[in-house]
Each structure stands twice: as structure tokens, then as C-alpha cells.
Length: 115
Image (cartoon, rainbow, N blue to C red):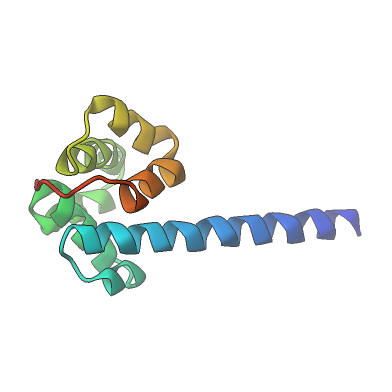
């Protein structure tokens, strides 16, 4: 019975973080001039995120290749940081504390500079 309670609380916390991340991504897409609803559609949201960060959305296909996807994902966070006018430190924040720094991008004063 105790395990069920712990799993229930864990599921609620994970759901809250997922919904919050979705809202943040919606706001980031809006700031970049992309449709916010695009964050809801699987694979298309990756295309739009890579388009915002790299300028070329088709690079998201590299994230489907094993081992290459890790490198490309790390580069994505640093490119996303620079696309909103931030530096390398913010890129490390996106890499290690993603929900917090995505919220800063979404609700902060960051403006989309371009890829």
C-alpha cells in the first residue's frame, strides 16, 4: 500500500512538471514567431525546436541516430541559448536544469534573436 502511495505522488509530480514544460515550450515557440500549438504534436515539435535553434528544422532527423543524438541534443541547447541572446553559461543551464531554464526563456525578458 505504501508503494502505491509513493507512485501516486511521483506520478502527480511528473505530470505537473510535464505540463509546465509544455506551457514553457508553447511560450518559447510564440516568442520565436512559430505557432505555439506545434509543441503538442510529436516530431513536429522537434522540427520546430531545431528550426528555432539551428535555422534548419530537418536537422532533428539526426536525433534519431543512436549516439549522434546525444551530441546533437547538447549542441541544440547551446544553439537555443544563443538564439535567444544568451551565452554558454545559459546553455549549460539548459543542459543540466532544463525545466528551470526553459521557464526563464519562456517567461523572462529574453527575445528571439535568430539562429
